Length: 266
Image (cartoon, rainbow, N blue to C red; front, side, top):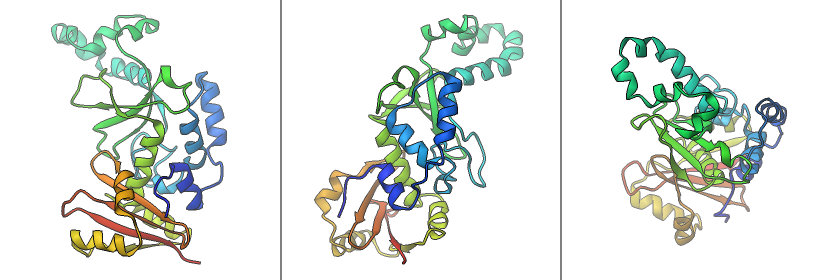
């Protein structure tokens, strides 16, 4: 059993091993005159336009059948859009405008915006609702595996809080959330086309799920050590190398606990 895996390693086992995003990555780096973290670049090379993430939180080029922004872009571009949208309102309500941090930024030359806030490469948001946005600090883009920050719509627009210690941690959480079909069956449908079958063990009660994991030969201590805290849940993934199958699910100690077996059907 494998308990510690990267997002890239999981994608390759699932059959997503073609560098579909290589051309896009090179153009994106050239157009923006930047480098990208290796952990992020390695993932996007395989995940670009991948149907597995059609309803996911990480922006992968396009959302298959979905809505909203789907390609990464910079926070300062977002600020420029807000300034364009709000300019008339600010003129009508100058007193309120003075208290708006984006208005204050708009009065500065763009090269001085960093006096008010850092720029971020925005790489995802919670699907559909868009309450939170995930980003990598632009100053960190030259690092191989930098932290990922989160901007919540309830906070001031320039407030970004560190949510994940590394890009790898964020991407692993996103893979788990998609594979465990937390809110959508997108991953199940995509993987069925590649010869994988989902077996739903969620008809069992919470205690039965834990017993089922033990029956599969899963070491519960090792599982607990590798549990991933995603945006809303504690999720897990174990890969059975001998039988080429994954066990994924959620263990919150609540009724929402779940367990899926994803097996490759030859």
